Length: 143
Image (tube, rainbow, N blue to C red; front, side, top):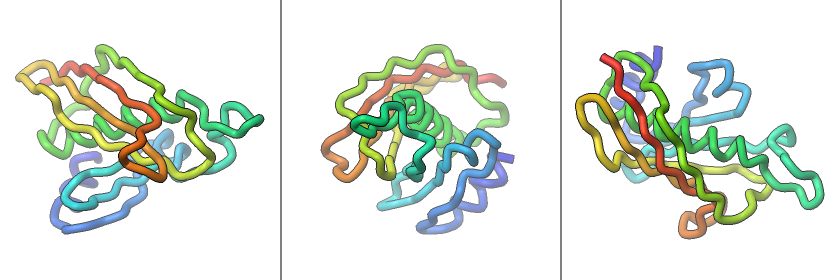
């Protein structure tokens, strides 16, 4: 299902598609965009994503899941995997509070072998140069 979804998108120069590939991605409001030949995952804001109401800030888990989804989509985009990779480890650095607005993430493959992959992801909101979180993710690639 993921491969079919992404193969259709690879043919397009730019796109902004809802990530309805899983109930979780749909519930979180994830979207996939292509901008300047980079794959960007977007989490559309809704009030259910708030972790602390005073002042209103995003729940850390929502930001973490956005970066994880971004890393998985990047892996599938570059490698056309048949199976979903197993998460080995995720290390997240929260750099500033997430405001109640749309949040963006992108990932890059740091190292990829036959059995393991390491990716780095960043999440930001209004300014790409001011990330709200970054993550290092390790996956086991299943054959």
